[in-house]
Length: 274
Image (cartoon, rainbow, N blue to C red):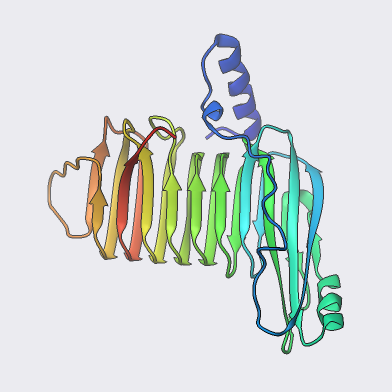
Protein backbone atom coordinates (compact mmCIF):
# COMPACT_ATOMS: atom_id res chain seq x y z
CA UNK A 1 0.00 0.00 0.00
CA UNK A 2 1.05 3.62 -0.39
CA UNK A 3 2.70 5.51 2.41
CA UNK A 4 1.23 8.88 3.36
CA UNK A 5 3.91 10.69 1.31
CA UNK A 6 3.34 8.46 -1.70
CA UNK A 7 -0.40 9.04 -1.45
CA UNK A 8 0.14 12.80 -1.39
CA UNK A 9 2.27 12.52 -4.54
CA UNK A 10 -0.43 10.39 -6.17
CA UNK A 11 -3.07 13.03 -5.39
CA UNK A 12 -0.88 15.74 -6.96
CA UNK A 13 -0.47 13.60 -10.06
CA UNK A 14 -4.23 13.06 -10.33
CA UNK A 15 -4.87 16.78 -10.04
CA UNK A 16 -2.25 17.65 -12.67
CA UNK A 17 -3.64 15.09 -15.13
CA UNK A 18 -7.25 16.10 -14.55
CA UNK A 19 -8.28 12.82 -12.86
CA UNK A 20 -10.53 13.02 -9.78
CA UNK A 21 -8.76 11.48 -6.76
CA UNK A 22 -10.57 9.18 -4.39
CA UNK A 23 -10.02 11.59 -1.52
CA UNK A 24 -12.34 14.06 -3.24
CA UNK A 25 -15.20 11.75 -2.24
CA UNK A 26 -14.30 12.08 1.42
CA UNK A 27 -15.73 14.76 3.65
CA UNK A 28 -13.72 17.61 5.11
CA UNK A 29 -14.51 17.33 8.83
CA UNK A 30 -14.01 20.61 10.67
CA UNK A 31 -16.85 20.71 13.24
CA UNK A 32 -15.91 20.07 16.85
CA UNK A 33 -18.62 17.86 18.32
CA UNK A 34 -17.27 16.51 21.59
CA UNK A 35 -18.32 18.53 24.64
CA UNK A 36 -18.75 18.04 28.35
CA UNK A 37 -22.53 18.14 27.84
CA UNK A 38 -22.53 14.55 26.52
CA UNK A 39 -20.37 13.17 29.29
CA UNK A 40 -20.84 9.93 31.20
CA UNK A 41 -23.51 9.85 33.94
CA UNK A 42 -22.50 8.49 37.33
CA UNK A 43 -25.30 8.91 39.82
CA UNK A 44 -24.67 11.13 42.84
CA UNK A 45 -20.88 11.18 42.82
CA UNK A 46 -19.13 14.49 42.22
CA UNK A 47 -17.94 14.95 38.66
CA UNK A 48 -15.19 16.76 36.80
CA UNK A 49 -14.99 17.25 33.04
CA UNK A 50 -12.70 19.37 30.89
CA UNK A 51 -11.68 19.47 27.21
CA UNK A 52 -7.98 19.73 26.45
CA UNK A 53 -6.83 20.73 22.96
CA UNK A 54 -3.48 20.65 21.24
CA UNK A 55 -2.36 21.03 17.64
CA UNK A 56 0.45 18.81 16.42
CA UNK A 57 2.44 18.51 13.18
CA UNK A 58 1.47 15.49 11.10
CA UNK A 59 4.10 12.80 10.57
CA UNK A 60 1.81 10.64 8.41
CA UNK A 61 0.88 8.20 11.17
CA UNK A 62 -0.89 8.29 14.52
CA UNK A 63 -1.35 5.76 17.31
CA UNK A 64 -4.19 6.30 19.79
CA UNK A 65 -4.77 4.37 23.00
CA UNK A 66 -7.95 5.20 24.93
CA UNK A 67 -8.70 4.59 28.60
CA UNK A 68 -12.36 3.88 29.42
CA UNK A 69 -13.43 6.29 26.71
CA UNK A 70 -14.23 6.56 23.03
CA UNK A 71 -11.85 7.42 20.20
CA UNK A 72 -13.16 9.36 17.20
CA UNK A 73 -10.79 10.04 14.31
CA UNK A 74 -11.86 12.35 11.46
CA UNK A 75 -10.08 13.23 8.25
CA UNK A 76 -9.82 16.84 7.12
CA UNK A 77 -8.06 18.86 4.43
CA UNK A 78 -5.60 20.57 6.74
CA UNK A 79 -2.04 19.31 7.06
CA UNK A 80 -1.82 19.29 10.86
CA UNK A 81 -3.43 17.23 13.63
CA UNK A 82 -5.92 18.62 16.15
CA UNK A 83 -6.31 16.54 19.31
CA UNK A 84 -9.27 17.15 21.59
CA UNK A 85 -9.24 15.06 24.77
CA UNK A 86 -12.18 14.98 27.17
CA UNK A 87 -10.92 14.17 30.66
CA UNK A 88 -13.57 12.99 33.10
CA UNK A 89 -13.38 11.89 36.71
CA UNK A 90 -15.76 11.01 39.52
CA UNK A 91 -15.18 10.80 43.25
CA UNK A 92 -16.93 11.21 46.60
CA UNK A 93 -16.33 14.98 46.70
CA UNK A 94 -15.80 17.73 44.13
CA UNK A 95 -12.33 18.44 45.46
CA UNK A 96 -11.38 14.77 45.08
CA UNK A 97 -12.78 14.62 41.53
CA UNK A 98 -10.91 17.80 40.54
CA UNK A 99 -7.70 16.52 42.10
CA UNK A 100 -8.02 13.19 40.29
CA UNK A 101 -8.52 14.89 36.92
CA UNK A 102 -5.42 17.02 37.52
CA UNK A 103 -3.39 13.81 37.82
CA UNK A 104 -4.43 12.65 34.33
CA UNK A 105 -2.00 13.56 31.55
CA UNK A 106 -1.98 13.11 27.77
CA UNK A 107 1.26 11.93 26.18
CA UNK A 108 1.50 12.97 22.52
CA UNK A 109 5.16 12.31 21.76
CA UNK A 110 6.26 10.63 18.52
CA UNK A 111 2.85 10.33 16.91
CA UNK A 112 1.39 8.41 19.86
CA UNK A 113 -1.59 9.52 21.94
CA UNK A 114 -1.76 7.89 25.32
CA UNK A 115 -3.55 8.84 28.53
CA UNK A 116 -1.93 8.27 31.89
CA UNK A 117 -3.28 8.54 35.43
CA UNK A 118 -3.61 6.76 38.80
CA UNK A 119 -3.87 2.96 38.51
CA UNK A 120 -5.61 1.97 41.74
CA UNK A 121 -8.65 3.91 42.91
CA UNK A 122 -11.29 3.38 45.60
CA UNK A 123 -14.78 4.73 44.93
CA UNK A 124 -13.46 6.86 42.08
CA UNK A 125 -12.63 6.62 38.37
CA UNK A 126 -11.21 8.61 35.48
CA UNK A 127 -11.46 8.36 31.70
CA UNK A 128 -10.22 10.04 28.53
CA UNK A 129 -12.14 10.22 25.25
CA UNK A 130 -10.63 11.58 22.04
CA UNK A 131 -11.87 13.58 19.09
CA UNK A 132 -8.95 13.86 16.67
CA UNK A 133 -8.75 15.56 13.27
CA UNK A 134 -6.02 14.23 10.95
CA UNK A 135 -4.97 14.74 7.31
CA UNK A 136 -6.99 12.45 5.07
CA UNK A 137 -3.85 10.46 4.18
CA UNK A 138 -2.76 9.08 7.57
CA UNK A 139 -1.84 5.64 8.89
CA UNK A 140 -3.77 4.88 12.09
CA UNK A 141 -3.61 2.48 15.01
CA UNK A 142 -6.56 2.92 17.41
CA UNK A 143 -7.08 0.91 20.61
CA UNK A 144 -9.79 1.43 23.21
CA UNK A 145 -10.61 -0.37 26.44
CA UNK A 146 -14.32 0.07 27.20
CA UNK A 147 -15.03 2.64 24.52
CA UNK A 148 -16.30 3.05 20.99
CA UNK A 149 -14.11 3.55 17.92
CA UNK A 150 -15.24 5.82 15.07
CA UNK A 151 -13.03 6.53 12.05
CA UNK A 152 -14.14 8.53 9.01
CA UNK A 153 -12.69 10.02 5.83
CA UNK A 154 -9.14 8.64 6.11
CA UNK A 155 -6.98 6.67 3.70
CA UNK A 156 -4.01 4.61 4.89
CA UNK A 157 -3.01 1.54 6.82
CA UNK A 158 -5.66 1.55 9.52
CA UNK A 159 -5.87 -0.86 12.45
CA UNK A 160 -8.36 -0.77 15.32
CA UNK A 161 -9.07 -2.84 18.43
CA UNK A 162 -12.06 -2.05 20.65
CA UNK A 163 -12.34 -4.54 23.50
CA UNK A 164 -15.80 -3.42 24.63
CA UNK A 165 -17.38 -0.95 22.27
CA UNK A 166 -19.10 -0.43 18.95
CA UNK A 167 -17.15 0.47 15.81
CA UNK A 168 -18.11 2.93 13.06
CA UNK A 169 -16.11 3.15 9.82
CA UNK A 170 -17.15 5.70 7.18
CA UNK A 171 -15.62 6.53 3.81
CA UNK A 172 -12.27 4.86 4.38
CA UNK A 173 -9.70 3.54 1.92
CA UNK A 174 -6.42 1.65 1.98
CA UNK A 175 -5.63 -1.42 4.08
CA UNK A 176 -8.19 -1.43 6.91
CA UNK A 177 -8.67 -4.10 9.54
CA UNK A 178 -9.60 -4.66 13.15
CA UNK A 179 -12.00 -6.13 15.66
CA UNK A 180 -14.15 -5.56 18.69
CA UNK A 181 -15.00 -8.22 21.24
CA UNK A 182 -18.38 -6.86 22.34
CA UNK A 183 -20.02 -4.42 19.97
CA UNK A 184 -21.68 -3.83 16.61
CA UNK A 185 -19.67 -2.78 13.57
CA UNK A 186 -21.17 -0.31 11.09
CA UNK A 187 -19.44 0.44 7.78
CA UNK A 188 -20.33 3.06 5.17
CA UNK A 189 -18.58 2.63 1.81
CA UNK A 190 -18.16 5.29 -0.86
CA UNK A 191 -17.72 5.41 -4.62
CA UNK A 192 -17.95 2.33 -6.81
CA UNK A 193 -15.22 0.11 -5.33
CA UNK A 194 -12.80 -0.28 -2.46
CA UNK A 195 -9.67 1.72 -3.22
CA UNK A 196 -6.87 -0.15 -1.51
CA UNK A 197 -5.82 -3.61 -0.44
CA UNK A 198 -8.81 -4.78 1.61
CA UNK A 199 -11.29 -4.20 4.41
CA UNK A 200 -11.38 -6.88 7.13
CA UNK A 201 -13.49 -6.50 10.29
CA UNK A 202 -14.72 -8.90 12.96
CA UNK A 203 -16.69 -8.93 16.19
CA UNK A 204 -17.34 -11.71 18.69
CA UNK A 205 -20.66 -10.47 20.07
CA UNK A 206 -22.46 -8.12 17.70
CA UNK A 207 -23.77 -7.68 14.22
CA UNK A 208 -22.07 -6.16 11.18
CA UNK A 209 -23.90 -3.75 8.86
CA UNK A 210 -22.27 -2.59 5.63
CA UNK A 211 -23.94 0.14 3.56
CA UNK A 212 -22.71 0.53 -0.02
CA UNK A 213 -23.87 2.39 -3.14
CA UNK A 214 -26.08 0.53 -5.58
CA UNK A 215 -23.34 0.30 -8.21
CA UNK A 216 -20.62 -0.93 -5.86
CA UNK A 217 -18.23 -3.73 -6.87
CA UNK A 218 -16.25 -5.92 -4.46
CA UNK A 219 -15.50 -9.46 -3.45
CA UNK A 220 -17.37 -10.08 -0.21
CA UNK A 221 -16.67 -12.84 2.30
CA UNK A 222 -19.26 -12.83 5.10
CA UNK A 223 -19.44 -15.37 7.90
CA UNK A 224 -21.33 -15.85 11.14
CA UNK A 225 -21.50 -18.78 13.54
CA UNK A 226 -24.80 -17.81 15.16
CA UNK A 227 -26.80 -15.49 12.97
CA UNK A 228 -28.06 -14.77 9.47
CA UNK A 229 -26.49 -13.18 6.43
CA UNK A 230 -28.80 -10.73 4.64
CA UNK A 231 -28.07 -8.89 1.41
CA UNK A 232 -29.83 -6.30 -0.73
CA UNK A 233 -27.49 -7.37 -3.54
CA UNK A 234 -27.80 -10.58 -5.60
CA UNK A 235 -25.50 -13.29 -4.27
CA UNK A 236 -24.03 -16.02 -6.45
CA UNK A 237 -22.42 -18.95 -4.68
CA UNK A 238 -20.48 -21.73 -6.39
CA UNK A 239 -19.03 -24.92 -5.00
CA UNK A 240 -19.83 -26.37 -1.59
CA UNK A 241 -22.46 -24.44 0.40
CA UNK A 242 -21.94 -23.86 4.11
CA UNK A 243 -24.43 -22.35 6.51
CA UNK A 244 -23.31 -19.00 7.78
CA UNK A 245 -20.71 -18.41 5.04
CA UNK A 246 -20.99 -16.42 1.82
CA UNK A 247 -18.14 -15.82 -0.62
CA UNK A 248 -19.42 -13.84 -3.59
CA UNK A 249 -18.78 -10.99 -5.97
CA UNK A 250 -20.89 -7.86 -5.69
CA UNK A 251 -21.13 -6.19 -9.09
CA UNK A 252 -17.99 -6.99 -11.06
CA UNK A 253 -15.96 -7.97 -7.98
CA UNK A 254 -12.81 -6.27 -6.73
CA UNK A 255 -10.84 -5.90 -3.53
CA UNK A 256 -11.73 -8.17 -0.62
CA UNK A 257 -14.24 -7.12 2.03
CA UNK A 258 -14.15 -9.73 4.81
CA UNK A 259 -16.83 -9.61 7.53
CA UNK A 260 -16.94 -12.06 10.43
CA UNK A 261 -19.01 -12.35 13.61
CA UNK A 262 -19.51 -15.14 16.11
CA UNK A 263 -22.85 -14.01 17.58
CA UNK A 264 -24.73 -11.70 15.25
CA UNK A 265 -26.08 -10.98 11.79
CA UNK A 266 -24.21 -9.71 8.76
CA UNK A 267 -26.21 -7.28 6.60
CA UNK A 268 -25.26 -5.81 3.21
CA UNK A 269 -27.39 -2.76 2.55
CA UNK A 270 -27.82 -0.93 -0.76
CA UNK A 271 -27.94 2.86 -0.39
CA UNK A 272 -27.59 5.94 -2.56
CA UNK A 273 -24.17 7.27 -3.55
CA UNK A 274 -22.03 8.18 -0.55
